[in-house]
Length: 224
Image (cartoon, rainbow, N blue to C red; front, side, top):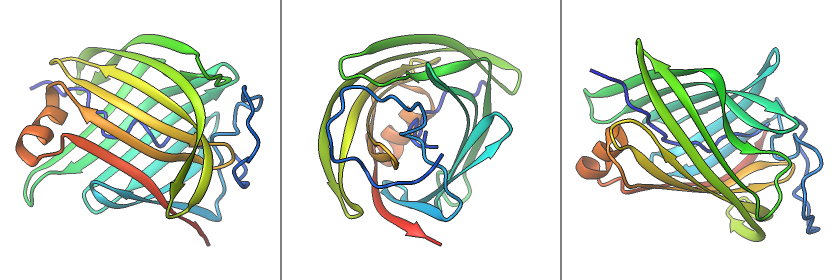
């Protein structure tokens, strides 16, 4: 049985040096790492459709690892941050659907898949097509996205000026998910909303468990 593309959270793409969110409106992000802070003393806590989620970040050579975990899922991305964009090299995910039903998969990409280009400028559009590999299967995937204007987002963690991104992720088995994300400079992901429209495992979550929309929102910036 094929493993289909499961984009639970194409969010958690954060990474290098924590600072407060900027209060000034800048059209273009000059520092390619400004939306991806890594700090061993900082843990980001999100309120999500799967319960409380804890996210941490660390480096492994040239790659940045984003690791997110809750009681019902684990999600780890191996990311390559370049001056021209954020690329995904590998995704590991574990999902506990019912008490005795679990889904685990690792997806790799022969050529890292572009998640979004850098610098992020309101109005920019992008399209990326790639091939993913999992358990000997090969499937095509396509990401279409655009960056909208900056806006202020209020969560339990505070008030942040964030740039809004919208992406359409299409994969095998008619899998289709619409993803809206808000990123703040110096912190990373503030909020995300995933609408499940297509088939695949995410379609199963929608039809059987009622997860038609999956949401994440920054609840706490926890200092150790």
